[in-house]
Length: 67
Image 1: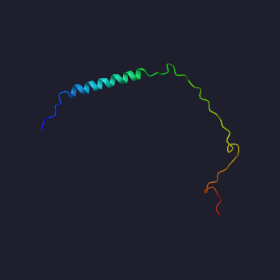
Image 2: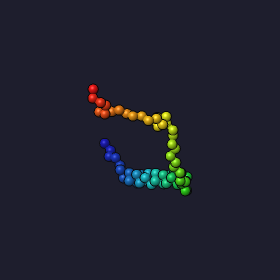
Image 3: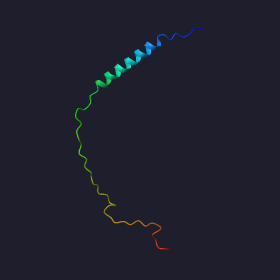
Image 4: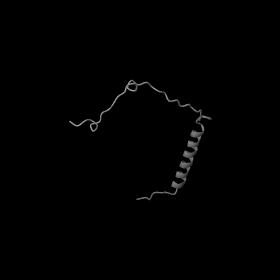
């Protein structure tokens, strides 16, 4: 049974890693990023909910009178 020749594995792995690194750098460098991100003003919008205008009381069982 012949033995596996691993003498070229180092250069193959190294060249593949370098190629992938260069390709990713090119891909990232061609991406357009915004130069100055604009600040958005955050305003809280108050919505009128029907249950906010009514006075409601929630009775818990412990606050009810004993029967």
